[in-house]
Image (cartoon, rainbow, N blue to C red; front, top):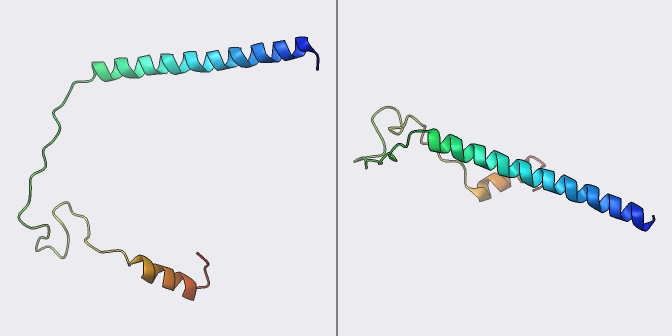
Length: 86
């Protein structure tokens, strides 16, 4: 490679880098403008419940099941039994 090739390659690389930085700045400005235009809402306060369980079959108030995942050691033992290496 000659010195002219190196200069042109560096110039192309610098131009591409500048184009990326310009695009990032443009997108950031658009995001900030969009966020400024959105109405601000107060963060919701979480209320403490007396009990996390309800009488409805082991579900929490959010409606999610309260099943616990198996312990890591139990899961690893099961994987070894099944022939999976971890």
